[in-house]
Length: 369
Image (tube, rainbow, N blue to C red; front, side, top):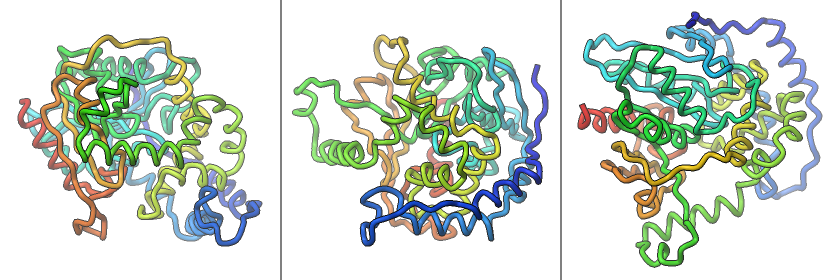
């Protein structure tokens, strides 16, 4: 069964959130250390004040509810999704997958321009947001990819494209691996391919590859703690995230850059708070790290990358080892003036560089029609 869905957070939940924010117990902080110890108190205080005084959840709710939404059960779990059909009869269906700490909010900006040419399916990952907490173990990238392919079958789409960011950039290629006869192409903003340990791989890297590897090493040395904790002890962290909205905001904000607007950050965080999915969402990392599922050989469907500066920099020789049909590789530099002051950099390209990403997706799939 597929049933319609409307986001409708009770006012009592909003009032409770505001009360908790007002009663936040702030942690001690050493003076003058900036963000070297983690997300600084002044940043979280500023976002909390914005959440209390200026952020309008009802406006976010109305924006989501402008689009048709549904819930269906797949493999024992509720799956929430937006389904926006194009006026074009020959439109290509696309399924767009978000990551963490993002949500379906990531893709709201692209719905209008992309739906001119594509039928859009935008699901909330199992255990994330309006899909609600997962009730079973094993929801890793592989199981999610199979569920997404089943969702598209259930909606009557025999052939479709897969688009992803963050965790979605891991899931979309697995969709192609799982159903290469149905997935016409995979478009992602990251190709997460890492060194295998073979020294010969490094010898083949050019200057760009070495720079990307250095950026990866910096991220691992400075910002990887979230991944390690999620992968090892998500339930230990879950108590703090479930009880304190300021704690949830601080934890999630570590991967929302300071250049992002406060309303975008808070809309994503609020989705996790109101749906009580902070704990189940971070379990995705544990399930992915502890899976016994293996893959044999590279993916074979046409694959396109739109890579944005300020984000993870994919390394082509490693990516070509894991994906045999990379047919498009585009790199967008920061600093280009965009509408509303947004630039071409960042991890959330669908929001930060909407027109660039939309055009890249459109051009990629136009070549595959």
